[in-house]
Image 1 (cartoon, helix red, strand yellow):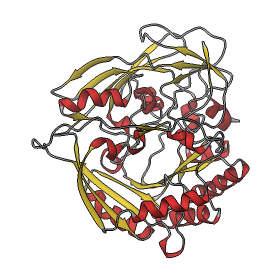
Image 2 (tube, rainbow, N blue to C red; image 1 turned 60 degrees about the vertical axis):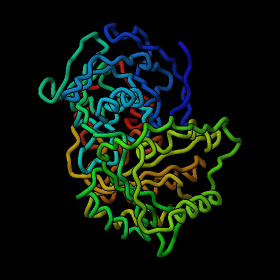
Image 3 (cartoon, rainbow, N blue to C red; image 1 turned 90 degrees about the vertical axis):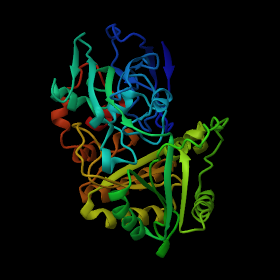
Image 4 (tube, rainbow, N blue to C red; image 1 turned 180 degrees about the horizontal axis):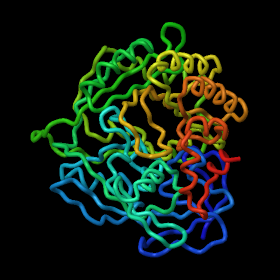
Length: 434
């Protein structure tokens, strides 16, 4: 056993022991403390932490069981990373049906947080493409769950934050591709109204859509940004295989955050103006399209020793434009902002999980340096806008929402609670249940 500390946001600190799980056929370890599955630690807040308890580390639970190249059905253990899956399936003409902005997430973590991607308006969440999963409970029982077999356990486990038991393996339906290349268009827009116009037209015709917005801009330029829409490209026999990507790395944690109002304004202005043409079209490899930050290893260190807090919310379609404008103004007035401000529209496809976060509307994700109470006050103010609209905040990226807000955002929490394994708990769940 060894000690672990932080999530990807590097906040909050937690002291917990780690037990490695390497054989899916064995039962859960006997321990007096509470336990929680832990994949690759890419959740931003405390949903992957278990302060005072034990983490069941699944990094060795990473075997591929079967890939049906004809149908695109992959059976694998829950600790397998998306990066490892892509290395296997892309040369076979398949791709992940849904992927978040990093490929360094585990299958179990993707199910537990019911992750979403740039194609939510077409494909919904990752959980919609899970055909079945095996759930190991602390009493030694096992359930193979699907939409038709133990469907209530299936719904509780997808988006269930790892609390219903240990996911040992899963069966996933992949999607066919002709090549590893993407046909992309990047449109520059001048304000938030421009984003909503582009999104409405693009979601009808493109599989992947997302925008970066300049949170430091004010006035008529409020919410200006770059809108990317893309599809998988057809086969390109004239193209040679791309060279291995070069990876940079943040080598150490600086003594203070490198993200502050001065660097933020400069970066955002340069990033926005780097594209001088209204539209830029290109054919690119899938990696920079889906995983731009994965090319900078340990990028979370740039926020300094206090880490950062990510905030991702969704607001309903009828209130989306007004709410996003209000959120952007609050952030600008507070002198905050984020150089990783991502805005997109979720589609209406229902998520299968009881506690799944995505729902129809506009979703905004931002990173804030941890400046203590000042940051907490800002995020609480954003909560007020989101809650009043009938929206929600994403648990996988949260480290501070109140229990009152959580129960408002996720009214199915009480029904979900009956499926929690009695030995399983997390720092997040204890916090929002106080």
